[in-house]
View 1: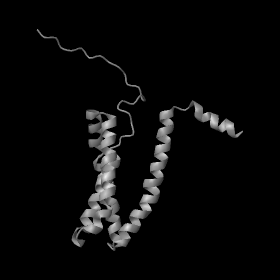
View 2: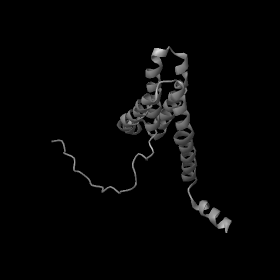
View 3: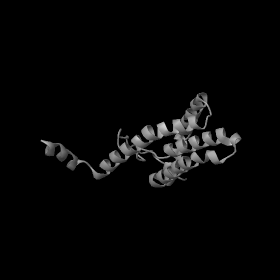
View 4: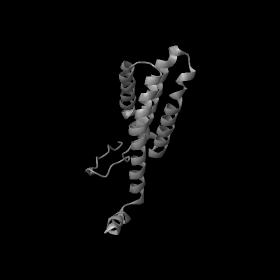
Length: 149
């Protein structure tokens, strides 16, 4: 009975399995543990609860603002280099966030907002769709080219 459930996974493409496992791990880390720790970190900095709304809004601005540039980067340089760029940007955003404590107190707010903005821009730079999706199928039409006289 249990082995029948595991046999289902034998027919699944290994790349699809890797994508599912990676997505699951990143979802737990980014939307679970990291969300709680970022909230506690901002509250520990004593920036106030009203700042937390602005902090989260900058994440949304960063994510939304990178949607079209991420697609253009993916089309220009390919999927893999764009994803590597996104992961590096994401890591940089996460690494510079805690460094806010080592800056002067007057820079805490802009530093926190910049780290959140950069982190979410990196998240958006990882396109999740292939370059040319196979669905819906595109109608192939040929357009006659003008001939030189």
